[in-house]
Picture 1 (tube, rainbow, N blue to C red):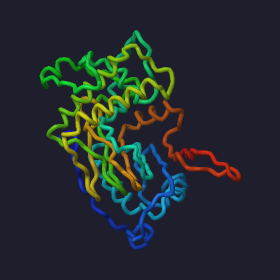
Picture 2 (cartoon, rainbow, N blue to C red):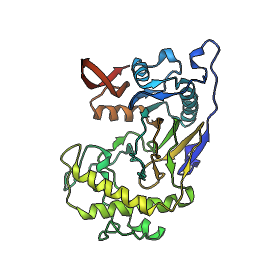
Picture 3 (cartoon, rainbow, N blue to C red):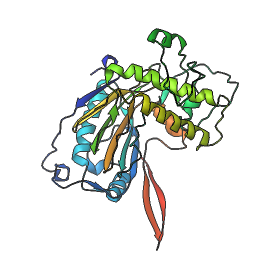
Picture 4 (cartoon, rainbow, N blue to C red):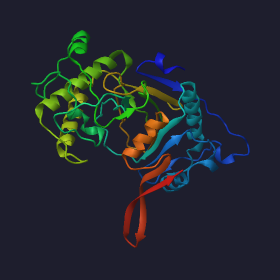
Length: 339
């Protein structure tokens, strides 16, 4: 399947591939899967060998502390499909994250958004007059130079321009959080699935372009409210307040568009970036959920991304596991392995 021919997003079923009889630990079981805690495991490197004995040791550390039951049958079925999909599109490296989340009310209000681009084509250096944040992509809503509506109240609906007008005014820029790619055609898409719990919410294809325009207008209004804002920390209060304001605005404005979700045994291909990305949100989930996110990338680009955070490549690590250090005491640990 050539990604160039695919739309903004599409659901694909992936077959459940039963491993050999010798690998009994990978066979599907009737044991229920439950979570002990909320945490995540991440790997960045070449495509993994899909054998439990060859996975990075940090995966076993994470799985034993986080999950009761086994996600291996469904995880390996999904990754087998991912590897085939990536290979057919000349990709052999990825950033893989498995996120386990206990139920909460965090997404009772949808968080409609498009994912930020990780990589952008290499551009000549630009002398910016103002400082730009090098931290989390959450700050991107205050850094774009999109020249949409600038005098609208966030509490009122945002009117949208026609597609022709939108194309005329929209001048996309490269957020500072992106990594300049060594390729003229960096990856701008990902594959995801949910192994446990509800699937990600998507705005239906027929109105996804309109939803993107609504998102861009809401972000422009937030930027216009504080045009001189400059981030000075990773956790910027100003950016957080603007992000929450945009979230509430989009929850109102996109509430009538409807939603679609992948079913069990399906994964989602979708594009990222404000210009072509699929508008989506985490689902309401009051029970356990296991979500898998795959971002493909060229080896040099992923090395640069890891280097930005001071990490070697390839590498695997887990975040969010409690470490007991004494009676009544605990801290969080980051278990990392250079491979």
